[in-house]
Every structure is written in structure tokens, then in C-alpha cells.
Amino acid sequence: MHIPFDNSYATLPEGFYTRLQPTSVASPKLLAFNENLAAELGISGADPKLVARVFGGNEIPQGAAPLAQLYSGHQFGNYNPQLGDGRAILLGEVIDTNGLRRDIQLKGSGRTPYSRGGDGRAWVGPVLREYVVSEAMHALGVPTTRALAAVRTGEDIARETMLPGAVLTRVASSHLRVGSFQVFAHRGQIDDVRTLTDYAIARHAPEADGPLGLLQHVCDRQADLIAAWMSFGFIHGVMNTDNCTISGETIDYGPCAFMDDFHMGRVFSSIDQQGRYAFGNQPNIAVWNMAQFATALIQQIEDKDAAVEAATAIIHAMPARIEVAWARRFAAKIGIRTPRDGDVDLVQRLLDLMQKDGADFTNSFRALGTDAARDQFTDRAAYDAWATAHADRIADEPDPAGVMRAANPAVIPRNHRIEQMIEAAVAGDMAPFERLMAALATPFEQTDAELAKPPAPSEIVAATFCGT
Ligand code: AMP
Ligand code: MG
Image (cartoon, rainbow, N blue to C red; front, side, top):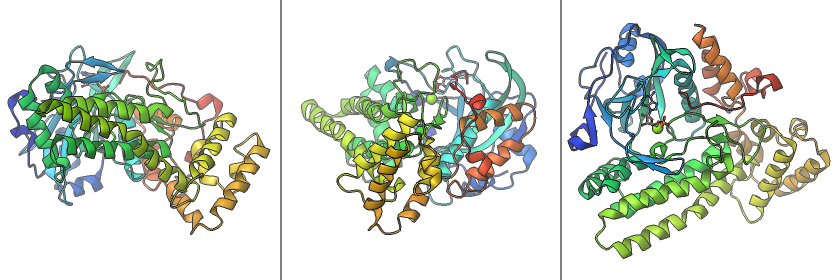
């Protein structure tokens, strides 16, 4: 197998990472391999046995420069001075067939100096969850890390019970996070903050003018990302600053989920008692995370007063920036190409009805304009009044049905389907995984009506746990 490595992170100062190899696993078996992504990355000669050995961590491919990255971050609002890749190894980077630099990282590949109390491993469940959800996200057109491979290790790991281990190979525009900057800023290592800023600008925002230009760039990307997530009913679940990328890609699919019945306050993580990362609070958290990024970045600027003033202006502008992106996304969901005054109210009225009646978020939007949408609501009179106002509004819109089709998926990775898929995979049956992957590859086409159904009461998954 040939992977055309071209490593840049490994040329940064030693303090940014620790060089080490993944820990070999007992008996690597390939669960899934993303052929299309492999081709995009320029990977050739991928024989299945070798793929399992390489992406299980048992064989280091030619040209790799394996390392674990250092970072810190705020977890649920509290600063943790050292996190880092506790169970991940960056194999290296490639320049893909589109000319973009991409990281190839193993996750679940053994302990590192940043493992703290952890075992450095992952089990099949979260590995396949991340595989399915990140690829679904990509197919929905939302910036995200990708999944290249999932390998079963042949070793059991201890969680609440003993569970089969697995390694995920994740591909990202980079693994730079807000926490990558915070770790140096908090230690007062200003030269390192500067080095990382230059690196991030070169890699992600070559047009950006200095640290404040980078801040603006990342705020814009994060604003778009949050609006995109929300437009598909996605709840990330752990928007800690170490899970907030500089690239603007979604990263770290832990206790995440797409909503079934709509509620602004929906939370999926069992440890998020306060609802800090609830669906409707995601814009606030994105701004909060960018404020932490700003705090880290401005340390390198000589004129502190001017830097604080400029950074504050950028952060203060972010909520409005998110609102604009949100309005555009949600207007499209009701068939409006370019939102104007009053459209957000119209959307909000629908969301309020959905919340009151427990309507299914995805299916209600997908069915708008048909009786199937009306059936989602118990207060039919209220829905009919809304539908009349909506019909009036879109009467002179060009192709509202087409706009809605392109904004409202027929199928999303529903949590109960993911849980069923995991249960089957643990038992050795990958058919539900293949079925999900097939339907989610074209989410705006209705190819598998069963997968579009919300869970029966007995199938509802209450919380996704952090025991990943
Ligand atoms: P996450 O919540 O997945 O973003 O992880 C937060 C931090 O915990 C990161 O530094 C991870 O590398 C680390 N971590 C999570 N699970 C493990 C594990 N099983 N072993 C070692 N480190 C872990
Ligand atoms: Mg993380």
C-alpha cells in the first residue's frame, strides 16, 4: 500500500507533540474501508489484509511520522491545562487529489503521554458511530472530519462491561483546535502561540492578516458550521474547546445525535446535566469558544489594548453572523432562497409548533406542503394557519419545492438505528452498518423508507454515554 505522505506538523518544535508509534493489536480485522476517500487521498494498492494491519496500528506505512499532539482545553467550561491525543496517533499528512492537505489519524491506537487515566483505546460502538455519523455529515454537505477505516482489534477493553476494541482512522483538514492554542497561551509560551498561528494561517487561511485575521476567519467558519448543524437537527454534545477545530470541521462524534422530535433544549450527553451543550445553546457556546480562542491569540500582539478592542469587536459580531447563516439555512428549509424581514418569525412559529406537538424535525420539514407534514402536528388548526401563511409567502418564490428538497434530507442517522447497527456489529453482523451507509450516502433522496422512520417508543435512545 502506498500513502503519499507529506508531513508538516512533524516539522514544528518538539514541544508541540510526542513522537511515538501506535500500540499493536492482537488480531486486526477490517470492519469498514472508505474506498472513495482512499482514492481522494491518493492511497493505492490497498489490499484488505494490509489495510487492517496499517489502520489497526500494527504496521507503520512508509513515509509516516507518527506522533501524538499536545493540546489543552475548556471541558464543560472548566480549563484543563493538559489534554492532548490520549488515544490518537497522527500518522502524517497527504496532499489529496484536490490539492488539499489532510491529516490521517488513528483513534483508539493505544496509550500516549497524554492518556492521563485512560487506556488509549476505543470500542466498536463509538468507532462505528463516528464512522457513520461523520460520513453522513459529509454527505449532507456539512464540513466534517471523515472516516477512512474501522478495524476491529481482536482485544476486549474494559468499559462498564468488557467490549470489543476497535481503531478508527480519521481524516481531517487538520487536527488544530482552539485547545492547541490555549495550551501555549496558558503556559505563557508566546513564541509557540506565534509559531502555531503562522502554521494555522498558512494551512487554513492564507489570505488572513495576522492573528486577528485568523480569528475572523475561524469565527466565520464556526458560525456557518453551527447554522448547518442546527438546520439538520444535530446536537454535537461535547462542544469543549478541544473539540472545536480551526478548520471549521465538525470533530469528535461522542454523545452526539440528530434529533427525532424537536425540542430547543434537547441534550444527549448523560453528563451534560446543565444543558450547556443543548441544541438551542450551540450558538452561544460557539461564541464562547471563539472568545477563548481570541484570548489565546491576542497574547502575541504587542499593543494589548488595541488587540483586545479588535478581538472583542470580532467576537461581539459573531451572534449576528450566526443569525444570518441560521436564517439562510432555515429559510431554505421552508422553500425560500433569500430570506427577508419576517421570514425568521415564520420559521420560528413552525419550530414552536413542532416543539409543542413533539413533531419529528426531519420528517416535518421534508414533508412540508403535504398531508404528511400536517400529520406530524396534534394542533391541526395551528398548523393549518401556519401552512396558509407559508403558502402565501412562497407563492412568488422561484422553485420553492426544489429549494426545500435540497435543504431537507429524507434520511438522517437516527440514534436508534445507530444503536441497532452497533449491537449487530458487535455480534459480527455488518449488514445494518452497510444499509445505513448506503442510504446516508444520498440523504436528500428517499431510498430506504424504513430508515426515515422515527423510533418506536421502545426504540428511543435516551442518552448517549461518554464511555467511549
Ligand atoms: P474527548 O472527550 O473524546 O474529546 O476526549 C477528551 C480527552 O480525553 C482527549 O485528550 C482524549 O484523547 C482523552 N481520552 C478520551 N478517551 C480516552 C481513552 N480511552 N484513553 C486515553 N485518553 C482518552
Ligand atoms: Mg476531543
